[in-house]
Structures are given as C-alpha cells and as structure tokens.
Length: 104
Length: 224
Image (cartoon, rainbow over all chains, first blue to last red):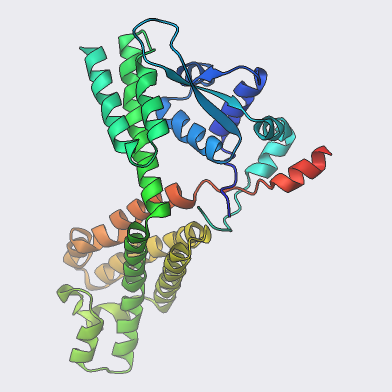
C-alpha cells in the first residue's frame, strides 16, 4: 500500500503556497521564506509529497556564476488537484487521523 | 566563519542522507550555496542536518527489517514489564514458591514481590496488564508494518504511565518507605518505563505517524 498524504498544518501551508503559482518552479529556500517553515520541517514534507506523486523536482542551473545547480519544485497535476480539494471547511475532517493500513 | 560552518553542516546532512536518497542529499546541500546571508545559511543548514537524520531514521525503520525488529523487541520488553508485576502478584496469591516467583522477575531487585505487589490495588494491576497487552499488539502490528502500531502504542502509553506511578507511590505510602518509591525511580525502572517508551513513541511517529484519513478517491469523487 502506498503512502497516504500527510495533512499536517505545515503540509497545507506548503500546498497552499505552491498552489498560488502552480506552473512556477519554486526553490526550497524561497518556499521556506514564504511559508515560514524551517528547512528541518520543509524538506521532510517535500520528500514525502514527492514520494506521493504530488510534487515534481528537478535540477536548475544556477543564475549566479560559481554556484552549483539547485533543486526546484512544483506541484504535479494530481498535487494541484489535491491541494485544490483542501477546502478550509474540509481540512478539519480530513485531518482526522486514521491509523490503519500499512506503511511503506 | 558562519558560512564555513553552514557548509560543513550541509556536507554532513548530505553524507547522512546520501546512501538513502542521493537526489535529496545533494539538493539539500546545494541549496545552502544559494543563500546569501551567512546567518540564514547557517540556520538553514542546521535544519537540513535535522531533516537528513529524520529521513535517514525513517527510511531505516520503514525499509530495514532489523531496525524494525529491534524496535518491536523493545516494545515487547515494555509489554513484559507491565505484565510481570501482576503475574508475580498472582503468583503470590496462589502461593507459588520463591524460586518460581524469581523466574518471573526481570531484575534481581524485583524479588521483593510478595510484600510489594499485593499492596498494589487490583485495578492498578489490571490496568498494567491491559497496557502490557496493548504494547504487545503494537509490537505485532509493527512487525507486520501496520500503521496501527502507533495507535496501540499510544493507547498503552497512558495506562502504563499511570500504573507505573501508582505502583511506585501506593506501596511507598503503605510502608512509609521512601526507598520503595525513590529506589526504583532512580534505577532501571525509570529508564525502562519512561525514557524508553518516549524514544519508541518518537520512532513510531516517524514510521507511522504521518498517516491520515485523506481518502483520495473520495476527494476525486467529490470534485466530479
């Protein structure tokens, strides 16, 4: 069984932020500044969202000379659909934990 | 200096995560080079170290049989700790021999049983047994990679903690003996029944704590 989405407040913040400009590739640091999440929280979320197929990531050449390429991220179509489905009135219900199934 | 420290931390985060997930290991490290403010880079890098350890540990526990078996063994140990006291008390009630009671003792200083355990109320002993059973269920679920491991563990945690406190306090009050209270609290009992459960709870949360009831098919259906 695949992993089901994490619906923490932090995940919602990331999804909402990325949904503002769904076609745009975003940097991790920029996302962190916009969502006010620290890297220790942000990266596990991004990793999980990518595993779940809600996020795509690729390398982007650096704009400044002498700096290495960096990761950029954006929502996949299913990620966009999922983020859009998270209406504020639904969040509480969807956040209710269901501790069943298997982890992988 | 701050920049240098940030790069060292970033390199460490990369090293921790590299074997498990090279794509993210490299991405996490390289992002630091793009942060112009040195202090912000250092803070970012420190978070990256935390994230890399967290992901490496989660990956170990989810994918590795041995780490999961070790965690399950620790939970079984907790189950044993909660079951052994009531079992010894039962042994006292039915007048088991001292040597038979010793078999039930996990540690040498548990062998004071027939004075100590009968002074613990039956309800407390029943709660302890319940906690032991729930811990055992949690361990079995963990071996089967079931997310319910976390639920059973959380359910066991409360009765285990309450009975732990009562098992220590009630006999101490009865015998007016602070040593009965503080002796075990300062020895293996505290580690075994307070520190280890907390560590296990954190590890279980990493493995199974991110599950929710988000049912994608229902969401899709609703959207249509």
